[in-house]
Amino acid sequence: DTEVTQTPKHLVMGMTNKKSLKCEQHMGHRAMYWYKQKAKKPPELMFVYSYEKLSINESVPSRFSPECPNSSLLNLHLHALQPEDSALYLCASSHLFPAFGNTIYFGEGSWLTVV
Amino acid sequence: AQKITQTQPGMFVQEKEAVTLDCTYDTSDPSYGLFWYKQPSSGEMIFLIYQGSYDQQNATEGRYSLNFQKARKSANLVISASQLGDSAMYFCAMLDYGGSQGNLIFGKGTKLSVKP
Image (tube, rainbow over all chains, first blue to last red; front, side, top):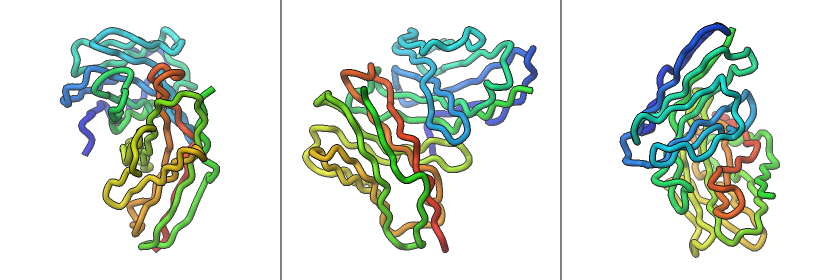
């Protein structure tokens, strides 16, 4: 069983809605990640938080807004999304960032559909 | 640039038989880590096995083993005694401690189907 928990599992939202994806881990990890995965493609990195500070933003549009309230929680706030943003959003964590010699664990993902 | 290549888009294996999923990588950094993940249709990305570039022995985790051939830059995943539940997409990934700034570089994946 994964120790990275994501909610909701499925989300359908309109282009004018504001919603959030949530991620939680209780492994004591200090690095947390958001990935986006389109159908039949590998995951692509969006954001990395290390010690609750944003370390990497892979030029993600501002309609995606990450937040790390504490070392166990990671949110992704969604606003004014486009249908092409429909994808599987994966949260991950590792002991440290960069994850030198340690494993990056992923959650179950949140399936997002923008209508 | 760092790169991961998985040349098998799809594979079939008979239940209870062993299967090898290919992965080759390209990096100029001597320090790197190699990962294999399993992704069922449900979407969860499940960690299977890890191999560090300085590890002397091939990694093993239960029915999974990693055939690490450093000179050939290959890191093939071997699944022994395949089970129906092994049907999934499998991703090889590399963490290059120098060039990728801590980002996992994924291959395109191999879809494994286990036949009863």
